[in-house]
Image 1 (cartoon, each protein chain N blue to C red):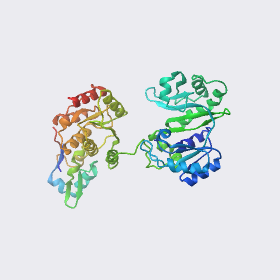
Image 2 (cartoon, rainbow over the protein chains, first blue to last red; image 1 turned 135 degrees about the vertical axis):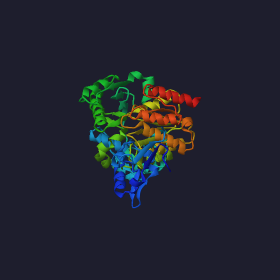
Image 3 (tube, rainbow over the protein chains, first blue to last red; image 1 turned 30 degrees about the vertical axis):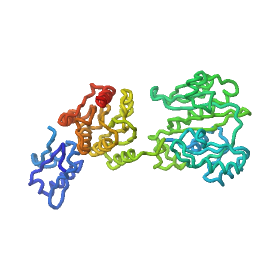
Image 4 (cartoon, helix red, strand yellow; image 1 turned 120 degrees about the horizontal axis):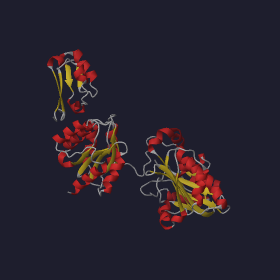
Length: 72
Length: 400
């Protein structure tokens, strides 16, 4: 189920990079990212838990991760 | 948390308060043996976490061990105010000349303990306060400064007690005050405190409540009394609604959304923050509102936790609207709570704009929270609206 309040978009190249996927999974305090063999998975049920900490933005190349506030 | 009478008396023993010989028994055979060992007449008292035992017939006097055994069978099954008996206390019957009352409780308004003393014990103290106020003294004392027996003596003397009785009562009342402080009690009461025909005083019955938050500090005492960690010792068993509320809090470690207590009103409350829950609950009632529940949220609960709590409250039969109100928050985020309650409303199939009577949580990330509330058309207010006023608005909306 997608988030009601928050959406997160990741560039396909970043999502496919196992190292970046692991970094994102480790950085997010509310487990929005999950790193697997197939690359990065967005855990949709956790999207609304996003605390807007921007750690994911810092963990990935600039512009490759976008956090969208769906209420704006 | 409440203590049974026999536990209260074990506490009294720690301060060497005068008590009669007694035994806790669990069978008619034990009751007879206890009566035989004590000798003479005994009183059998059902051990329940409630007052009103005498009126319910759960207190009996026996002159022989056989009678004690028979009365055990009579009183054990009696349910007093919804409370089943755990055991029976068999105690020596005392030749009473006069009954007194002594109690220490917490005065929330003065933020100090208050000592109540009366020379008219054995009956409801409220009745004494109403009909014989000159026989009841109220004395506040500091919980920080060292205690002095002088405070107890003056409180007793204020009820007209003098001479030998005053001298004998003073150390008992003083020790009760000390007990109250030592064990973080919210109530330490002796009623009746009897003066016997020979002039001695003895504690006939006692009530003790401990602050639930202090359980950790008194783990050794609770272990000594055999009180398990799962024993909540509240005035009644938890309802299904309250058990579900506890589960909401326990499944997610983030923040607090707990202490859910069920009431029979129509306004659901999602409230909290630094004493805010109590203030807001009282404010709703002051405005004539009927809360459907009490609860405490704080410590930045997750969205899912606030969502699940909201769903639980909205699912409660009779709830027409909810009021989401907190004190000014610093360690709880307004936007996170806003997301949670709105999500809870939507997942319950309800329009947040309709079902949330008021959202009054000012503080951390409030601008972000207010954006969310605006998007869903929820009425909200900031700290310029007092908690009291917000509660009034919620109650008014329910009547509209």
